[in-house]
Image (cartoon, rainbow, N blue to C red):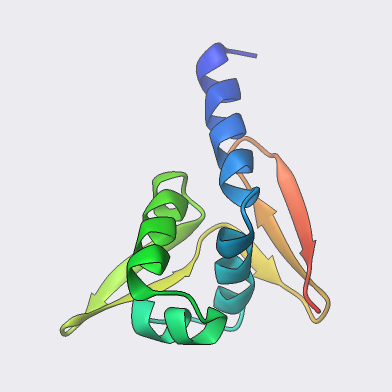
Length: 100
């Protein structure tokens, strides 16, 4: 496997390995949200949420779209079931996170 692909997979997996980012992903499993809504949902400062969303967006776990003055964030390459959030990298790597 080429080094570039392994590096991308490692960065994608590393982005999942932080509690705040995991919380954001689980909350986004319920649908699109603004930074303010996400910060309120996980009780973290807006600036910290913005930072983590930037990292998640950089590795392709989150996308954003402008809605007037606000940015709406949503999951990318993910499927939420009643009990788990299933995330998939473009290379085929998959991760399942329990939703409790």
